[in-house]
Image (cartoon, rainbow, N blue to C red; front, side):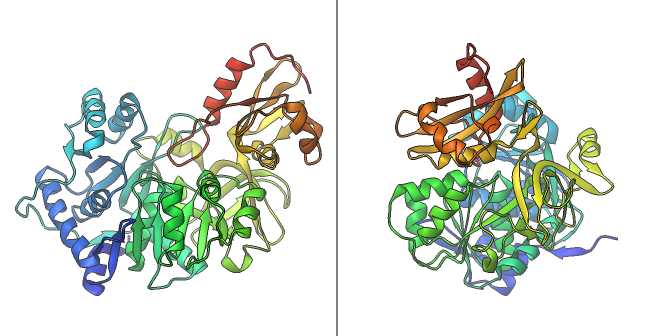
Length: 492
């Protein structure tokens, strides 16, 4: 029998009506009482549009207060929230719309044309612009939810193929938020800066988690390093979540130290180069590496503040919301497997993918890492991205970290290309402030890497293809490198 969880916003509006719930970068904010009243009006409008318990409400919009209100309104209506990536094409969005089959499609003004085209392609209802016009109360609102009922469907970023809709329950979010608070601590005056995309679980979890805690969100409509730096130095922000690309851009935006009220900067979204962590720490940012994934409602392992410096480069130990094991002996790389109350029950309308991902209750993440004797996890790479050359495994993140230690290289992506002799050859795409020649970089690489890990070629690009959350899309890098290096002689 499922347990019941109170509706988080309803509870906070009653218990903490005057506490700030959400604010923008210019400090304008809504209290929990005001946010609840706004969400109730939108919930009534959703119900009048036909959204009831279990129906999907899709949102194609950028980060805004209206977006967060739509999320809470969907919960109050008993429906399922489905945020979609606004950087996708209409055809890609249509594929996801067909999968989730929404009753209501919402959008903002800048994405109205995109949403209209995608909905037409999918045969979905015509989009309605946020915020919805007010209507009389249409149905009783929901003030409690079964922990096993679906809160949202978040589509994976699709770095390894077509995106899948990850079902996240109320119990998943509750377990994840509880575990995070037990690790980081909880201060009633916390203000979590949200600059990750809200269609990404790392972004979406911030307003959900904050509503559970009764703390504030500072919501930025997009990531702008200068604006984030100002907010960090304002003395009001206490927590920040970023991916490595964002952290690097923050450090490159100016050379001033970071002094303020920050308790932690959570850095996730893939392996983090040690040189980047060292730079951030030297500038006064309390960086804490974390490992998570959409299927686990964000964080799985996270360093504690007390262990952040002594285990720099590790993604920490398993939080209370997850059991973690590696399919290999201690200290050796293998696939990371997880289970626990924060892990998704499966992929929406995709039984084959669900069956293929789970075995005896354990989710196969396809990520590669190793556990040390004390249970600290080091994430090496995505399993799909591991390069096998001459029978040796090369983890792209390790080579990328070495490349980023070279002056002028701002970002790097290492991939494998087919090679008749070695199976695959290692090549690298970089973004740099000056021309980069393999002959100049190679001495540094050889001081840090085995010979078989040295790229056979390094190509300079103006930018690297990435998801909206900042993860480099290696499959596109692989395509671009193959086109440039079609005549490259093999080497090892």
